[in-house]
Image 1 (cartoon, rainbow, N blue to C red):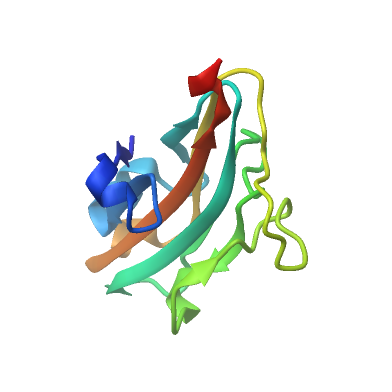
Image 2: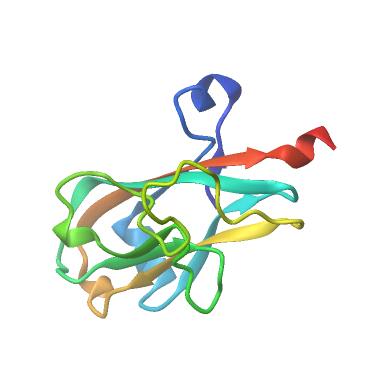
Length: 143
């Protein structure tokens, strides 16, 4: 699972970071999912970004989704073709529409944020790394 950042680190715009190497994605597997963060009760997600910090090699069809629905976790990042990225990508999921500024995915109970990997050739990958940043707000901490 991803790491919750300290107060000093969170001051840079993200509250949670998940870094995945090609080996991590191979472990998740084609069509597999992994929990990368948790939205606390009373919380929501303001922003999700993906950065390909090391180019993937050995595959040309790596697609990821990030969201909360176990059947199709695409609320925050939807069908992102990592191999085609030329810059970081933010808030492309089904719940983010029209460059909105309000949080999405509000929940009354703790909810897992999932990363889904789709790549029939992920076992052939020999290099690559992505960084997924999330900004999660937590009103429940004040309850």
